[in-house]
Image (cartoon, rainbow, N blue to C red; front, side):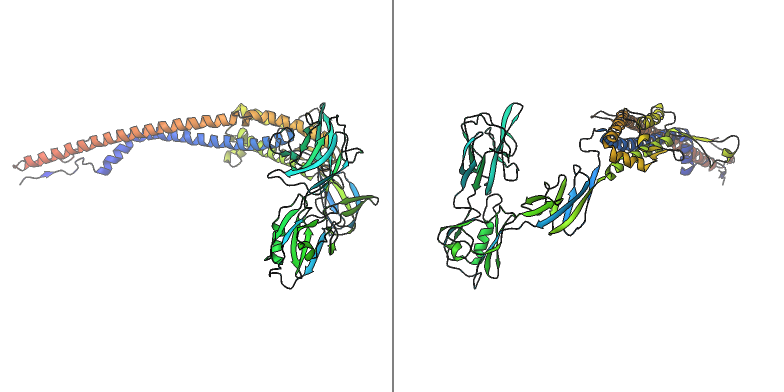
Length: 585
């Protein structure tokens, strides 16, 4: 039987076809890779813009602080304080404290008024007592005028406004002043501290600020806290607490009403006392010691004595706390002020042992025990020096980065760099004059002269080895801050303002976008456009590849059909040799 020899025929496998498609599309894939390289390069550029923005923003933030554009920051020296006996006092100083050494003797500490009753056999059993008594004040409030005139005809009492706290027992003065030709008044306590009262203009709420006196002459003003003030019809005169003729009143608050029933025990009476509402500063704390009720004033000081009075029944008298006339039966500790002697001759009394911020100006003193010690206050420039160092650090960080990205450097790793043909590497921003010029402008802004001098005047210069701006004379900087703070502050304010004004166009200011944000947005747009083009190219490549692949498969089928036809012809006895036939050339 005749046979057909198909050895050498150009039969293509699927792998052969895919290879042909890949080769045909390779030049178009190269175009896509070129676009992807562009995207990658733009990504690097955007990252550089972002880094520059971060570093310049950090520098701008410090510049604004020094330049006065940041209202939350105040540049200046602080004060440090040391105490000879830390077990006697704890002292802090603010920026207003005057440097120096102070002698302070604590003759006595402020004490809280404490009284006690009789001991009972059981504290949880009913005492069989009933009645009502007032504690922390009297059965009704009273106002006794000490001084009238100068705008005030008298004082009185009234109900406490809803939600308000009654004034505590003590002396109060009405101060008058003129501001811009307008008479104003306020109410102060015995320490001169303004207290909150109703608003004189009729609006809701209370205020401790000065209020306009206009329209109040000849009227009675209700403070809303139990005290009323009757203004006379004559014009007031300027008066402050301590002045002769300043209107003054002694106010005795109404106490908290404590109702006792026959089934109340010593424990329940204690709890009722502790849960009661008292006038400001008249709080009473009850406890039980040795089966006896002990009452302690909520605040220390001679003015905070516990007042008690039976109204119905004799509960307080039976408990052996107060006599019928309100006098104390059993005193445990008298109410007393702290007595301090400053610099050996000035005696000061205070009702508290802590938070004493008006003994020595600028100092807050907490008393721990009696004795004598010294307080030393010195100027502390550490915070100001830290801010200067922060400015230099942010500047150097930004400049180092800009120098690397805008400069041209020799490649020391290249084999040709040691011969007559060295190679160089250009920074990504080397051809961008916007940033190359920024380096020089920044340096001029920081190190240039102002109306108050330059940084060299306070010990700041350039390190020629590292090209960093740094403190070259720390003693000079320290002296400038401690002995000429005003001049140094003005110098740094001018420099901070110059740096901020320069950087604002780069990082933005007042809601406007800076160059760096605009550059990043532009890069983002370019990347998006390139990615869209890449996607379109890939889609076309995929489409054209599929068409080419189908064409190859069609030719392959034509070849197989021809082979089959040849085999069928030879089956009739013919002989054919297709050796070397290649349908695809």
